[in-house]
Length: 64
Image (cartoon, rainbow, N blue to C red; front, side, top):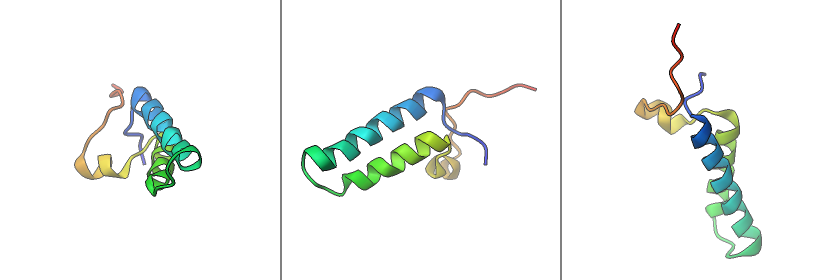
């Protein structure tokens, strides 16, 4: 499983995920916290299954 997320994409996912998880504890208690967990998880791992299905990559292409 190769990384298909770039550095900025990963950072944005982690920040957005933490915000959504934080809203569960501070603001309205909605199911969006689960989406936050998914965003943090994919941001930490660096691989997004939806990107894989769609054939997208936001990471830099390494040349041999």
